[in-house]
Image 1: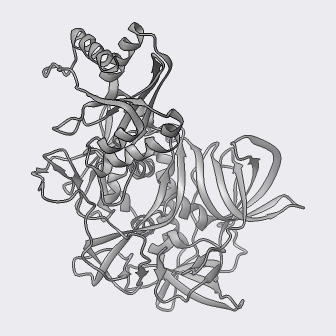
Image 2 (image 1 turned 135 degrees about the vertical axis):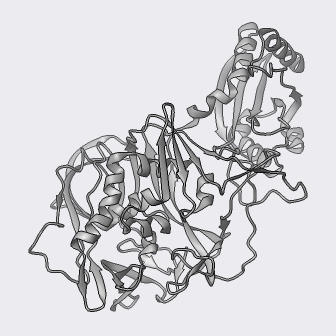
Image 3 (image 1 turned 45 degrees about the vertical axis):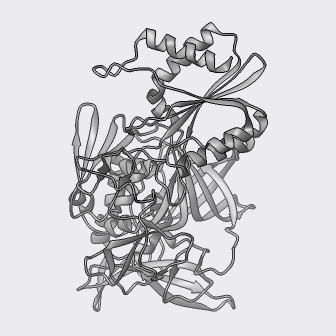
Length: 533
């Protein structure tokens, strides 16, 4: 976890208060009421760009694990009937005024099933915005700036897809576009009109309700929530059983989100550079912190040429409809084959970082959070990459007495120091796995999507010794080795887990229409049978 330099260790956040900035500054900070291990209360602040780190009853700069409170999941109908304290004129402006949403919700069990209990929920407005939007310092900074998204992203609606041009001045971390899940969540914010209006209401309310005091501009955070029809909230907080009231401290995830985006989304930036070898898609930034605990220095400027990605407690998102996204690049360069396949190496050993707007003359590395995790079921989006392989397998099964057949897709794992789990379009690289029994043998066929690579990997046919061990241990190890060995088959492990293993070369494809003829498919199926006899 990241640390904040000027705040002591193990300080518990009791209240999250007003935002403030000096009139001659563009940097907003936010007041915090903190409690130390002895129960003493003090006031402090941190830059608003650190909003993702701020959860009530959590600890800043922790030296140990702390409990999160009562875990409760609930489902809402929508936010239209929520009561808001924003418009309550009786509330006195103050350093620690926190606006809330008040509403009824239905409790949900761990399997997503509705329970009979209706609960009264008190949800801090800041916490809802933090978990929905502020998964990176860029979005926290942008939220309080009017028209920030329009300034940084140009959206073109084509008949079959949206094209989102990332404009040169945009400081959204380039490395985040390598993550299909993060692209999906950003697409949702940019393209869903209801979500975007909610995000933009933050800056509008900042202008409308902020006030001047002495040399400062002060604002008690508030915004209009999106409708979130039928969404399930995964939360932690305090539950008062006798009155069925729940006080939310943290939203850890959202499920059953409807995105209302029906077309594919393509992101383009001049900063995206594609390797001509089809091997690795590079970006200008994105060094991971390798488990270190960098210290955020609020009074320092970050350098835009040195960006560190910091792991923080992520908010999970699960969409009902998987938004298909991709990166587009018009640039290419020859890859240096002498360079190890790694994420961009860090040469800066400094533990101090900044979440302020990055500048060229920044004194410390910039920090970006990896604060959102997409858990949407989306493997169906990548099935068409294996259409020819599926046709061949279907033909083989029709002509041979196979039993216990199954077909699955797996995403290659994301392993620190390696990039082959992602294709050059920024989408996950998948492996098709076919399992069946033939002549009392447990057969596995693996097909890796290398459509972006000049040297495609042949299919691998395995006659397994132990199917249970494959399902529990060996499959995961093989997928990991495919990544670490740069899209090569890990032959050593196959010798240990198989009676027999062999390659199955792909059939010839018509280069004009990118199709495989029926005769080639038939020949492919025959060659598969020959490898098994």
